[in-house]
Length: 397
Image (tube, rainbow, N blue to C red; front, side, top):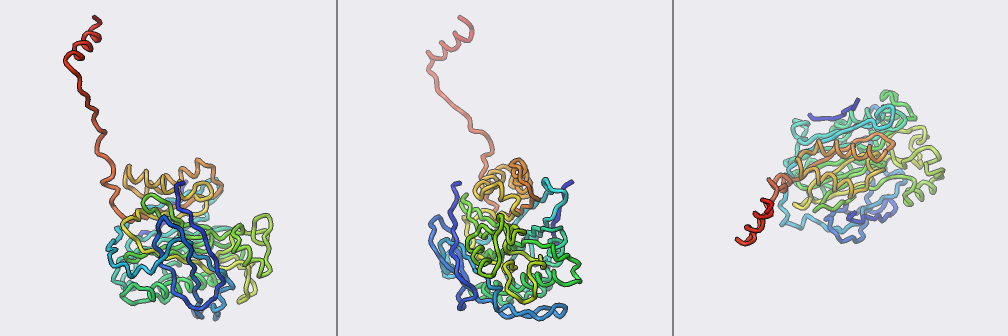
């Protein structure tokens, strides 16, 4: 039985990562114009000092959990200067989840195409916006379920989101700080006895927010967001795994080890919420962290759709394979729900060994006009003499 967890309220680009220590002096966040030319850019953002809700103890996040920040190495520019870009995405989406070969499903996800309707009076931005999230649990489903059930509280009610009407560099910097706060407070909430989540249970988390023309992605773990631009796959998040050399160095610098490809020989990811048996004592710098990494994209008319999926998909499908599959399906039926189902079906055919969850977010309705209405007709000309010969052959003379 398929469990549907939903809230309704290669020719691929090579994307490398250049990593710099964090915290660092305050810089503007990266605003990325994805193109086929790969160049290097860095981003380092200072973590604010924040306080938890009254139910939690005070938290000093100024240390940024000794994280190393990785920024996507693609061509960047300050895109607020690009006044010619008047594209506004037309959002519609679909999602699907499947237990796969496991005995139960530890994945959860959220899909909200119209955030203003979902939040009601709490929504204060003039731009239309959408919100999506994938939580890939481990050690049981409880941590992922808790994050899904409390996502609106953490990411909107308690996150102290910027309320300015202008989406500019300062706004996106403040949004990034707010979502960093949300990740870290959600992590601490999982340690609270009131959450009823075992200390050996945890979850990765990836969120994507479309605000007007801007796409904001925050990730901790090995879920992945991939954008389709003109048919090319552009990866917008880094997989936080022990195989990542930057994560490996951060872990070893903090006294952790990578054993048999696992963090401390136990965990397949290097960033996750929960798993508090690996984060004691409170306030100490530990190899396993919950701090997310961010990416900002100014969407253009070349951007067709976004795929957000757990590692059960990406373990067996490349970014470009997934993008090409969804693009082909959209040209056939223009239904992102069926695309998400087909992604999971293809991953199952590839013998994935994990739960599977996929969200497909369409950014433009242009696929509707891209499929020919009928097969082209073939025409040919024949001379009178040729017709006589053909008629003679057909009549057997």
